[in-house]
Length: 281
Ligand code: A3P
Image (cartoon, rainbow, N blue to C red; front, side, top):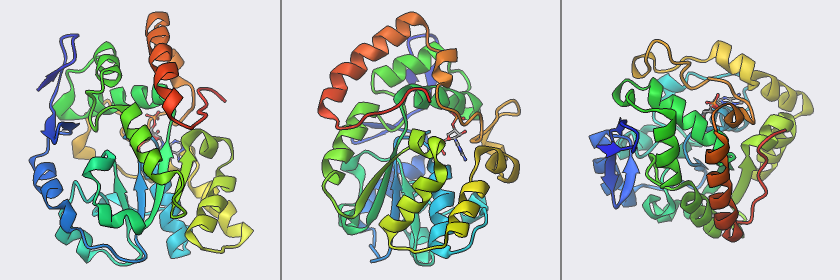
C-alpha cells in the first residue's frame, strides 16, 4: 500500500522499485519479459499511463490492417505484455500492435529494433486523468485529487515518475529511425495530420479518404459512443477510459499553489528533455 499523504491509499506492487498496479501477474509477467520473442513487423505503443494509449492503438490498428473500423480492445485483449502472458503475445497475429507503460529499464531490449511509437501528453492533464482512473477503479477508490497530485509529483504514481519515464525513453528513441514521438496535443489539434505521419513512419501508404475515415472514427465523441470498457474494472459513477478527452482540463483541478509547485518541477526537469509540450490549445 502506498499512502498518498492525504489519507488515501493506492494499492501498488513494486517491481525493481517501479510502482505498478496491484496485479500479481504483472510481477511474474515482467520477470519473463526478457524471453519476449520479437517479430520483425511488431509495432509498439509506449507511454506513461493516461496519455492516449487507447486512442493511438485504434489508429495503429486501422493503419496496419487497412480497415477503418473501431475494434473491441476488450476482446482483442492481449495488448500489454506486462498485463497478459508472453504465451498470449505469441498467439497474436502479425503485425502485432503491442502496448506498454513500463519505464525503459523494464522493456525487453530485443524489441528495441521494432517500430516504437512513444506518445506523450502534457503531465498536468495526464495527472488529472490518472486521478479519475484511480478513483474509478474499484481497488483504488480511496484516492483524492490532492493525494494523486502528491503521488505524481513524488514519482510514486503507477509506472513511476513521469519525468524519468519521458527522459529515459527519449534518450533511447530520439535518434532511432525506428521510433516516432507523437504528442496527445498534436493529435487533438490535427488528428488526420498525425494519422498520416504515423502511417508514413510505419511504411503504409493509404488514401486521403482512408486517413479522413480514421480521423473521423477516432474522434473523442465517436470513440466514447462506440467503445466498450472493461465494465467490471470501473465503479458505476466512473466515465471509464473515455472521460473528457481535452487539453487543459488540469485548470479545473490544480490550485494556484499546486500549479506553482508543478511548474517549478517542470522547468527544472524539462531542461534535460527535448520536448515542447502544450498545456492548452
Ligand atoms: P481524460 O481522462 O483526460 O479524458 P489511456 O488510453 O492512455 O488510458 O488515456 C486515456 C485518456 O485519453 C483519457 O483522458 C481519455 O478521455 C483520452 N482519450 C481516449 N480516446 C480519445 C480520443 N479519441 N480523443 C481524445 N482523447 C482521448
